[in-house]
Image 1 (cartoon, one colour):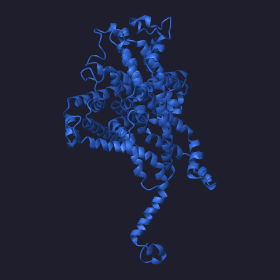
Image 2 (cartoon, rainbow over the protein chains, first blue to last red):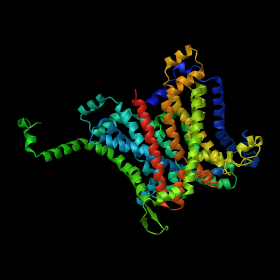
Image 3 (cartoon, each protein chain N blue to C red):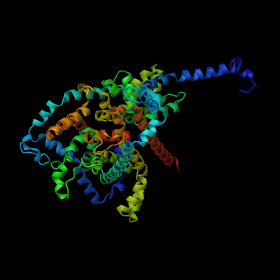
Image 4 (cartoon, rainbow over the protein chains, first blue to last red):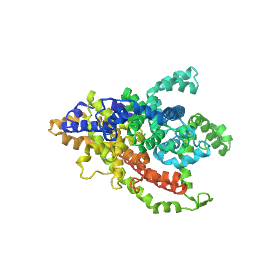
Length: 289
Length: 316
């Protein structure tokens, strides 16, 4: 995608010069600090001893006697290891199947000529326009008919095909010179061998961009798993956190809520801080999530 | 292939024309077969969960049960008129419109400011970009958990720090006049950093020589913003507006966690209404009718924006 190339480059010099008056920059710095406040509070509240009481709960100055009690409480109240496992299974399962479907379909669109190509292309495009979140009611009924209600497979299945991923791979495959494939063809490589040994290895950056988008969005998905899952032991992190929050809210255990939230978002935040550039360029590529 | 030279096509001439056409068709199919097989896995899932689901919505919207256990009966457009006459639905539509405009404008405005301020790349701007982007990554449910405390009356973060400055301490999530705006703050906080990325990308296409020339002609930063940068960013604006609108209709996780549509339905949004009809009232007919109306509105909007974008790119 063009956007991704553009973002990795620097803004032209003349544009950069005086693009914002100092006031704009100062305002942005202030707002960036405001943007961090919820995270800051989460960290401070997690480490605050419960004995500090509700009146000091909002204090952003960290307590002088930090404690891990809140984390321990959150760990005991919520079944976080189970939620983690479920979310990991969901994200991995979706991603693995998607890798297969988008590779095959992307290759067909990029390199093969076939009857009805435009029509099928538009059929794929429809998925982008239809916004899957809105189709939760019919999809729940379809999942139930398959006997997949209250299963992790039911949470995963509607996302196995991805129009966005297909278009991304199509673009990646189109950029690969045909000479490479011709050479393999002369050596007698089959269609699958060519995909496996030429196209896939040369498209790793696109696969990783797609993986970031896919995992982030399904890690954070809430409404769909909420509808599909009924058993507490099959809840993903988001649904688990919402139940946990509702319980702890009743007892005003805000430190515990902060600790639970921290546990849920820590994996993605840490991965982001390590692979910042990758994340940001993947999100630009994705456009519509 | 004129009749004047039949000898040139001995095989084709001996085959009846209809069979010839069939052969051409099967020939074309044979060539296309590998592509169809490669597309099959994707098409199976798309057929089930996109086209099938879409068809299902259209059919379900035409049927209704008198009581939860009564048999389905065909009611035509009754569900649609029932939804349109339902004050909870129209209320949700109005709330959603307020929510869409009230979140899109501030978050897009802030995103533009952030992008302009952080256009140059160095350690400081990278850190600031990351700080503004962090909310994008976390689940809406987690953001809601944090903001539940921020909005907590009296002891919460907001009241603790600025409550004293206000004449009356508001009950942020409990007051029907305020709750929707409180929810909007979370959305703005969560999305501004996302839209910033697109403006950052868009800024890279501002032509350097034009900026240089304007600078030499003595145009100040605001003149250059108004007459060079903003016109150049038009496609980006359009794109971000479409995403912001889609987000306004599809992001409702915070409503579930924080307000459940209340107080007095002041934070009820369309998708939450659909969920309530389907899951809480078991009214698939009404839920499907509401889904259909929302899909139609969104698809119309997307098609319109695609056309505008296509015209822009295709134009001279």
